[in-house]
Image 1: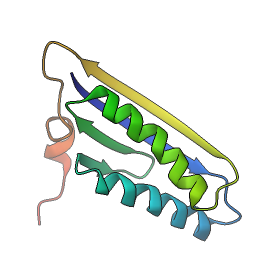
Image 2: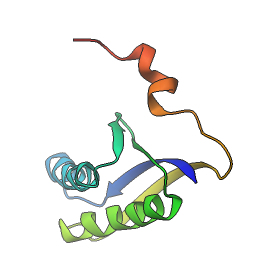
Image 3: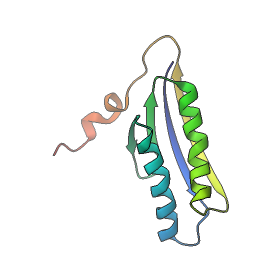
Image 4: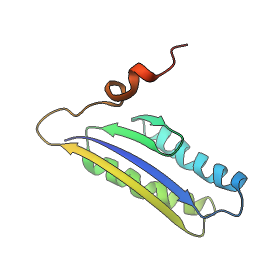
Length: 101
């Protein structure tokens, strides 16, 4: 099943520096999954062929933030999935807006 998730992880942190450090650890975890992802200013979008894998990643993102020191984590998740056909990819949705170096 093709799927895409957008996840915003908001760790409870004592200051902005610690917040960014914790979020950076979550993004490093996402990068390590090997799936295609794009980091935005509010959320990170991840796409893949395995719905269950994406849900496991969403769950683990919260665990990563807690291991990074967060006492509490809020996560906001958007999901698109389709069992019978392709979904719009990240590149199809925003590719024309990305800067080309």
